[in-house]
Amino acid sequence: MEEKKFVQIRKDEYNIKLFVMKMFGKGKVSKVSIEYTPVGERVIVSTHKPGWIIGKRGEKISELTEVLKRRFKMENPHVDIDEIMHPEFDAQLVADDIAVTLERFGAMKYKSASYRVLGRIKNSGALGAELRVSGKLPSDRARSWRFAFGYLKKTGDAAKVVDRAEAVAQTKQGIVGIKVAILAPGIKMCDQITVDKEFMEAVKKNVTFEEVEETFKKVKKKRAAKK
Image 1 (cartoon, helix red, strand yellow):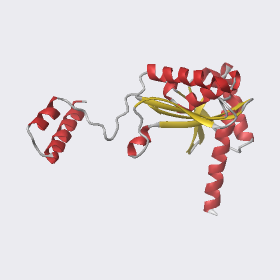
Image 2 (cartoon, one colour; image 1 turned 30 degrees about the horizontal axis):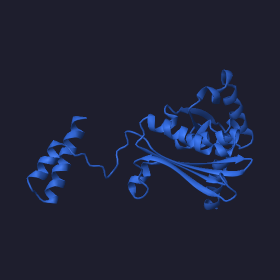
Image 3 (cartoon, helix red, strand yellow; image 1 turned 90 degrees about the vertical axis):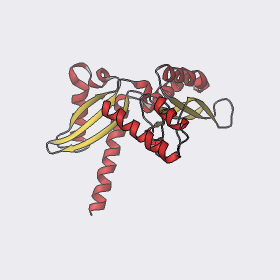
Image 4 (cartoon, helix red, strand yellow; image 1 turned 90 degrees about the horizontal axis):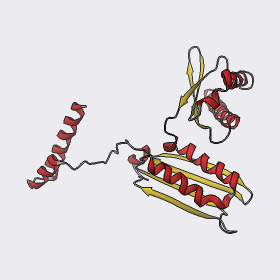
């Protein structure tokens, strides 16, 4: 019984997230998360357009709250807005942006749309990004086109810090799939090594690898203490 209840709760959460994204339209909401508190449910909507989500005098928030109570049987839902300050580093918003462009101007605009978005991500200072657009774009056979730049980890623990998302565009030529992966600036990789004066001096002394590693750990602790 407990297992069935748990599955039903997760199913309801998934339906709520889909409903909120469809209600505000593609490209407006990045993600929806639900938290349970003693006073009720807290629905957090992450967006780069808070004014659009709130509406005039909060009418859209009120409408969403009523739907959550009536349709999804929430007792006391409270909708909060989490503003995304840098939408160019949010993979879901980027994927939705490309999907909306293809739906509006046609699937043959996939190259210009992808290069435009990739340039915006690069100019904003991202460490790396990858876009994959798949579908019957230039011909009758489905193909996958890749647009990328910079440094992007794909495997191991370091790949967990890469923001990934997918979107689907319904075009006249057919369905086009979009996959986006972005490595935002300021993220520290677990295998990242900074080569500085102290590190180079330790290497020049012809010491063992273990001693170099120990020196690197000491330098890292000193930097952390200064911060």
